[in-house]
Length: 227
Image 1: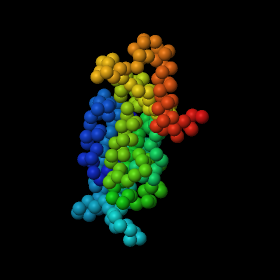
Image 2: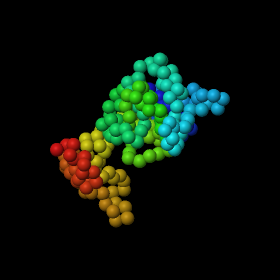
Image 3: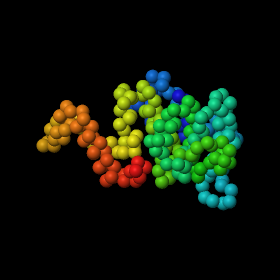
Image 4: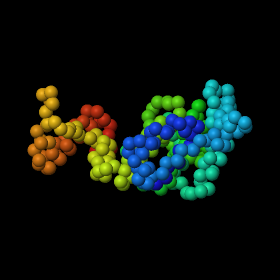
């Protein structure tokens, strides 16, 4: 799998994409992640990538030409299954979307900045817009890192135990049950007896019950998808 991330601040993506599961997946050759500086196609001696907003609104807007040239350069080299723009008004990222994107071969993620990007890019080049929540950040770099992480951890071989991802929260529209590790008792706090029973059927029944109860309490809207 290959993910190309387009940004005007590539430094913001160095650490999130170099460590932990994503970093190990890159080293294993399971995924390629390339970060591209849009300023490569910036205009004028200062490589400008933004200009004033038509209509007099406050804030600067990323210009159409540098973004177009960067996307065009990449799409001339290979086919991309999705060209994604990180936007606060895009579809809300979910585990289902992450699952879907993890099956793609090549993806471009465009990070907005300033006031946003010239809308003509969104109209003519973007195939999908994704948001990580109903709030505004300084740019799309952190959301792009979130999307990349959610995708990469699902690639076979990225996790030491590939079955671990199948029991994550939201995979079946339920939250995960509580998890515990050694010691069995600490400070008077005990691990539930059922988890120490060695009985797989009892343990699974307890986990299913806990997942349902936690979802009812903390994310009841998820249950509407199931019933």
